[in-house]
Length: 467
Image 1 (cartoon, rainbow, N blue to C red):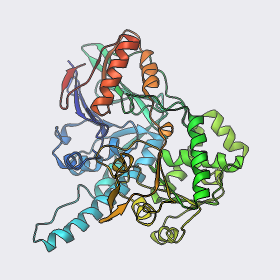
Image 2 (image 1 turned 180 degrees about the horizontal axis):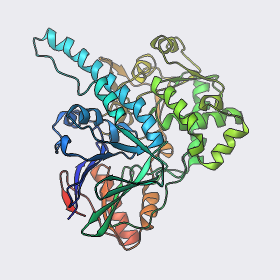
Image 3 (image 1 turned 30 degrees about the vertical axis):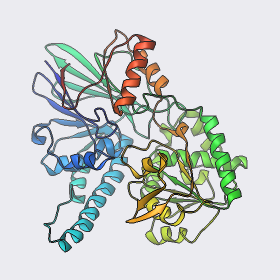
Image 4 (image 1 turned 180 degrees about the vertical axis):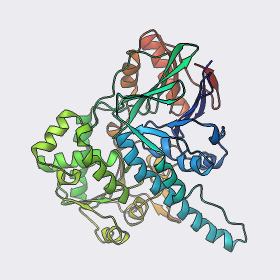
C-alpha cells in the first residue's frame, strides 16, 4: 500500500518535508524546506536526506517560504533533475527567494572560511550555490489552482488557495492504490481570514488523511481591527517620543500586509510619520510580483486598489521609500527620529534589520514592533522574551527600545480557524498535526478532542504510516 513518511516540520515549525511512496513505485516529495531557529536545528540542514534524491519522480511545493523550499537547491546539488510543481505565483516567488538564499549561503561560507583560515582550520563549503538554485528554477512546472495534474505514475495533484501568501496552496494528492484512490490533503500554511489582500482559505470536504499545520494551535489571534488600532496608537506614541520605529518583517507576505495597512492609515490621516523606508531588496522585488498577480487578491482589496488606480503596491503608500542598495540602506541610519523602517529578516536572524538594531535598539525613544511569530532560538524571540541585551553584528547591544508584539497580524490561522477549516471534512479522516512546536500541537490536539470529538495524531520525526 501507499506510504507517507514524516521527514520535517514534525514537532517544530520549520523544515517542511514529507515523502509519499505509492505501491506502483512512484516517489513524490511534498515540500523541501529549510530548518530555521536554533543552531542545532539549522545544523540539521547539512545532514543527508533521508532518501536518495535520484529516486524521486516529482517534488510538489505548497508555497515559496524558505521553510518549505529552502533545501531545493541542495536537492538539485545531490542529483535531483525531475519536475518541481507549484502554483504560478509560487514559481515566480521561488526565483526571488532561492537565489537570495543561495547568495547568503555563499557569503556565509566565505566569511566563515576567512575566520577558519586564521585558526588553521579546513574550509567549509556552502550548503549550496547560486548555480544549484538556478538548476532548481529550470525544473519548475507552474500550475493554477483547481488544475488536476498527474505528477508521477498514479499520483495526481490539485492546488487550492491557502490564503497565506501569494501563491500559497492547500495540496490535495490522490494516490492510486489497487484500483482505489487514497486522498491526502496537506493544509500547507493556512492563512488568517483577517489578512489583507489574500482570499480566505479554500474549504475541502473529502480526504482519507489530513496534515494540518499547528503553528498557532494554542491560541486565537486578536481581532484585526483591534490590532490595527493598537498599531496606530504605537505609531502615535513613537511620534510623540521622537524616535524611529523598527519593524522586522518577512519579505514575502508580511511586508505587503504592512504596506497595505500603513497605506490605509495614510489615507485616513492616521499616520503621523512622514517617511516609511522599505529596506529589503527581496521585499522590493516581491512587491513587483504581487503587483503582477493582483487578479489573485481578495475582491474587496482589488476594488480598493482599483479605486485609487494603484498598479504597483508601493503606490498605495505615497510616503514609502524603497532602499535597494547598501548605500541607500546606510543613509537611513542618519535619520534619528520620525521614520518607520521595515527591514528583513522577519525573525532577526540576519539581513538589514541587524544594522538598524545597532543604531536604534539602545535608544529609549525607539519603538520596535514584531508583527509575527518568532521561533525559539532566534534573536527576535530573545527580545520578545525580555532580554536586557542581545548580540548584534558581534557586539552586545542594550535593549532600551519599547518592544511591541502584534499577534493579530499573523498570516497563519489561529486555533479556532484551524478547527473550523478541518471540521468541513466528512467521514472523519485520519488527522496528523504538523508545523508546530510540541506544546502548540498538543494544545490543538486537546481542542480538537473537546470541540469536535476528533482524535488527532502527533507524528514522530521519521515516522511512516500507510495511506
